[in-house]
Image 1 (tube, rainbow, N blue to C red):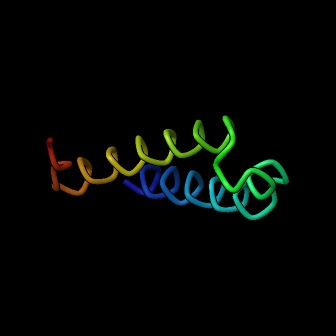
Image 2 (tube, rainbow, N blue to C red):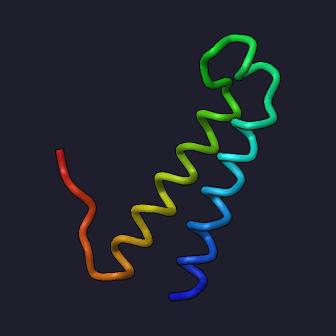
Length: 60
C-alpha cells in the first residue's frame, strides 16, 4: 500500500510544483495542457488510493 501512497504523494507534488513554476499557467491565469495532464494523473492516483484504503470514489 505504500506504493499507492507514494504514487499519490508524487503526483500531488509534481502537479503543485508545476503550478508554482509554470510561466504559461501564470501568464494565462489558466492551467496549461501539461497542468491539465498532471491533474488527471493526480486524480487517478487519488482514486487508486481511495480504492486501496477501502473507500470507494464518489460516483456521479
